[in-house]
Length: 499
Image (cartoon, rainbow, N blue to C red; front, side, top):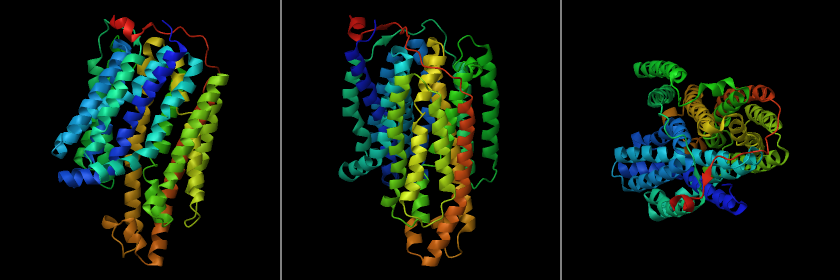
């Protein structure tokens, strides 16, 4: 059956609700991290609350994408939502950091499905021409979650306690589940095909080892230790084994033919550029503003807010324009150019300028990134066979996640090492906080501001170069229009299938 306009609107509301729930969880927890760690007596292991969630969601993206192709995205989507809700319950019940980290692993797996399956479902039931508009609406959940998540997390923690930042998912999620059961149609999978278990194990091993190696290296000041070397070797060997397996199995986890298609390959490259160029730096911008511009933590938050707001507006506008015209090539060309320009402006800003200047520069980065972030998914889906909708969507998301996670670790290590070397003798890098700097003499504050500017300047230039690579890739994107012709995959209304 073909979805009626009313059922399509209901589906869109359902997918947007669930996508927002998954995106909000990560940003809400970040605000309450210190409170959680202190209450559980595990300040030194605090990072595992975030790392366990992020790593699980990253590793499981290709697995969930392939399962969506084989079993049908509706079953996988609803299963991930149920897993996410159950894990949220256990996160709130955790009595120590180990229990919480394990529950966060399960929550991360569910979150991967909440992020990926809505895009896959849209790719299965919506014509290519309309996908940019629809995907941009669903994709708006991410920047909105970034805007409201930290504030909401703080309010819930201060009012009800940190456990409720997990338990609040349950009533909202149950409503979303009821809506999804009604709205999400049954879409036929490819039953009878064997799942690529060996590919899933080797890719998961490679990604985990790669992320751990980058995280350990950055936290140790880029000194080489045996665990880092071992993790790097494991990542290389596992990746080589994964490629060998994918070339031989009849139903590969990540079909390597995707990389032979020029359109899909360029979409993958541009997705990696987003992860490296923007997501790796946005977490460090508030600290940079506090130190270089001598502002409070509250005021420094205006800069990432400007970035995310620019991304939100841009993704909605360009999604509508791309669906209206069918043309997609101009958006990544313009977007990468704007983002590279904004990062170059950030690199050469002298310390002490009015705050609206870095806000405008980072807003430009957000506008540029939002101009093509969700359009990439629509273009890659339209270039792939219908039977690979889930796997190609997962591949585009996976490279963005890996690029973001790895580059974030590298950027953090470079900032930490550079600041420690350049600090004045009166300040200790191990105990350096914005409050300590603001309480120092005017000369010391000026010196710290200069140190941060000198350290962050080359980083902004490097990230601008990453977007410059994106400009070249976007120029190589084949010309064309998204088609209005579409034969949707066989779908059945949920109530009909149940009957």
